[in-house]
Image: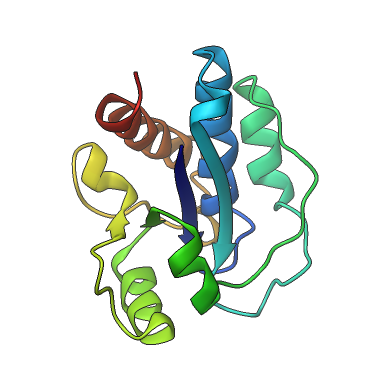
Length: 149
């Protein structure tokens, strides 16, 4: 089983979208027993808050179920518990290295490393939840090509 943790700034837009999109893809491929998938934040700003309504709406528009969950912050224990810690952008990577004391096992990467490279734009600022969905979907498809069956 591969354990994947998606990380963004607040854990209310991008990382929960990635969590739900990958869970949906895994379920549709019958691979549920091969993956553990979760998400969290680098900040404390949104701890306990649900997925941001426009993110939930974009998931629903695309037919992806959005589980009820509250935002949580990344911990040092997460580094040992997960095989891959997948950030949405460069700032997340910097914050993760600071919070975790580095990446000695090479577990940290970016979502779009599995697709076309670059950063997943933060729809909190851009309002582009559709573009965020497409980027995350491309990253998840690349991730499944690499680690799925």
